Image 1: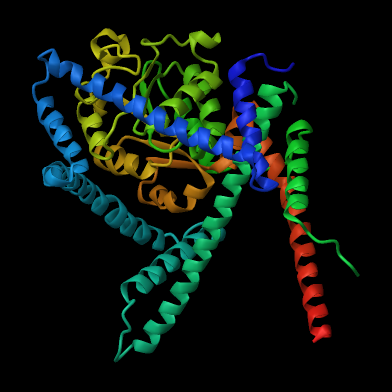
Image 2: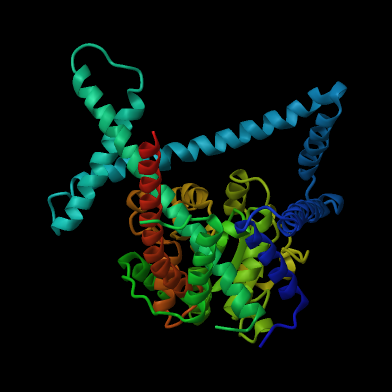
Length: 211
Length: 275
């Protein structure tokens, strides 16, 4: 049965507006596009205000005096819109970048670098063990990792002994990267295709009551 | 042979018909079951009643929607296990996404289920400042998030009396794109097992984490993973609809690619003949 919920009707209207772009640019699509952009900005603004309100209530109730530091830094960051005093905003920005970088670098080294090296070494030991199909998979992963890393590490042309071998490795690494990019694009297309399915599914099932 | 011009409107029209057919007349396309999806099913199935599971991360609603195909049946499985669920959104739109999957799963009392808000599940509001916010959240939940999304202070929420830090988290489920942050801080630093219902476009980039943290990190892949999870839960939904569409669309796309190439070659030959 067709939905009587006005929000489902609004959702259906804007979904159809979005799909009209497939025929070509038109006013319906523009209505959908601008409404979406406006809604996202408004939603972000309201959520931001609510978040600030929720986080600073304890400060004004005297339960969390340390929150005053972040409040002062937040107010300082607003000076960025005032050209004469924009330098004041550089202090909170520096704190943000410093804290963000410090927190990220610590974890990045242990997971993305050491973690991946450990995984590659342990997989290299499994190539000749067990099911040959699994072994082939491990071999492919280990070879791809070594060759692609070589490609990135030796971007500057190496001259002297072993330069020819390095140039072959670089070339193979380049092709491996292309394979990865192809896979990523394929996966991306699958995702977008699936999202189109979910939108049509919503139209037919939630709005029209079919399916 | 003269081939009619392939206008994009024709192509989109055909693709639209394919999608409509897939949703209206499910062909029941077969798909392989993944060992990793089965492992995820078993990990959630081994949770003890009352254990706390965090569903959290950050990204846009539209991109994360793909994860809902697996997230919705997984929430039903969590309810079967009587696990307690805490939704932690680290992006503005993640709040809406988490509310959506909870509503779609139908496990909350408001949707006729058994899960009582505040006792069995909690929805936090937007937690700004990834990744520093993640570190703060794991170390001291009450300081990082003093109230839920409705403004109720943590000390008035029964579930929050048992949830103070990472030590209380049995499992982290990430239906959002920011899985790298979850692995770096929750799994690598505190050993919390993590499940990612990955978007297809994110899968290849994050899958090495499964090798780096075996038996701690598991991932499904896009709508296929969703369909697999639906099958394990004996249900059908968005995952099955998407897989049906993939099957028909893949066949149609091959035909379109062949026609496009034949069209291009025939035009090129005509140009050469004119020269």
